[in-house]
Amino acid sequence: MRELTRRDFCGAAATLPVLLARSARAGERVAAPDGGVLLYSGWATKNIGDIGHTPGTLRYLEQFCPGTPVTVWLARANDQVIDMLRRRFPRVSIVQGKLDRTGRADNPALQDAFDHCRLFLYNSGMIFNDRWPPPDHVLKACLAHDKEYGLYGQSFDGFASEDQERLVGLLSHAAFIYTRDVESFYYLREVGVHPPILEFGPDGCFGIDVRDDATAECFLASHGLKPKEFITATIRTDTWVDGIRGPYPELMEDWATQLRRVIADWVKATGLRVLLAPEVEKEIESARTLLYERLPADVRSHVVQRDTFWNVDEAASIYARAHTVVALEPHSCIIALAMGTPAIHFFNEGHGRKAWMFRDVGLPEWLVSIDEDNAALVTAALASIHRDYSRAQEKVKRAMAFVDRRSAEMMTTVRDLL
Image (cartoon, rainbow, N blue to C red; front, side):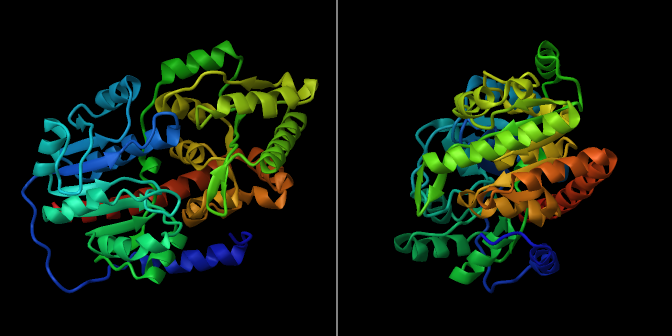
C-alpha cells in the first residue's frame, strides 16, 4: 500500500461519479423462479466483524426492499447470534448447511431456500482471494440453475494464477459486484471482470443497528467507565506477509509498542480511561499480555481489559458510548461509525485493500498506517477529535450519510432484479 496523501483521497473521490455510473453488457439473462433474496453471510462467530455483516446488510434489505422475502444462509452461527438475528429480524428465515456446485444441499431447509430464491447475494467480506481456496462452487450452482447472483461490498486482493481465468468468468456472470474499496474496483477491471454492474459500494456492516444496551451499561458501570469519557483500543496479532498468514513476532512487538504509546499518550493528556476491546476472541489474551501488563502502573490504573468475548450487539452499544475507537482491525471502526462514534483505523498493509474503505467513505484523516511507526499521528488525531468533539461527530454523520445514500442505490439494484 502507498502512504496516504491528500492527493490519494482527492483522486479517489474524483473517481466516485464514474464508479456510480452503470455499465451495460449485451445479452439477456434467463429469469430465475419467483422468490426473494438468499443472503449468504456469517463467516465466523469469534469475530464481531464477521457477525456484524449479517445484521447490517439485513437492515438495508429491510429498509430499502420492504416486503421482499429474505432468507439468510449462515456459514457459521451459534445460539447467541441466531437469537439476536431473530429478535431484530423476525420475518427473516435462517438456514445453515452446505451446497455443492450442482445446487444440491445437505438439508431440506437450505435446498428449499436455494430452489426458491430469485437472487443469491454473497455478503461482504474478502472471500474471493488468493489467500485461501475460493468457494466458487456456490456461484457454479447459481449458473447451473439460471439464478441471478450478486456480490455485496466485497474486497479483492488478488487471484491465484491457477484460479484467475475461472474466477474472472464466474464473476463476470454476476448481475452486479459492489467493491467496498475503490482499489478492488480497479483490480477487477484490470483482470477483466466485466459484470453488467461493477461499482464501489460500502461494506454491509455499516448498516448495523442491533444493540444490547442493558448488558453494555452493566459492563460499563461495573468497571467505572462513563459514556464519552473513555476510548477503546483493539489489537491484532497476525497478518499476511508474502501470501503467508501468521503471527510475526517482530511485527507484533512493534504494533503492541505503538498501541501502548497511543494509550499512554491519551491517558497522560486527558486523564480519561481506555477499554481494551476485542474484535476477535483470540486477541483477548494478546491484549492482556502485550498491552495491559506492559503499561506503566500509572497508565494501567486507567485501563480496563475486557476478559470475555461479546456479541456484536453488546459491542455496538459500548462503541456508541465510547469517546473514540482506535483499532488495528477495521470492523470495530465500522461499527463505531454506524453508532455515531469517531474511529481511527491503525492499519497494516497485510490487511489488504479493505483498509481503504475509510478513505473511500470520506475519512482519510482517520486512516493511519502502522507500518510507518505512526503512533504520533494517531495521538494527534485523537487530540484533534478531543479538542472539537462536536466537529468530529459531524464528520461521522457526513461519512455515514454518504454510506447510507450509496447503500440505498445498491439496494435499488437488488430491488430492480426482484
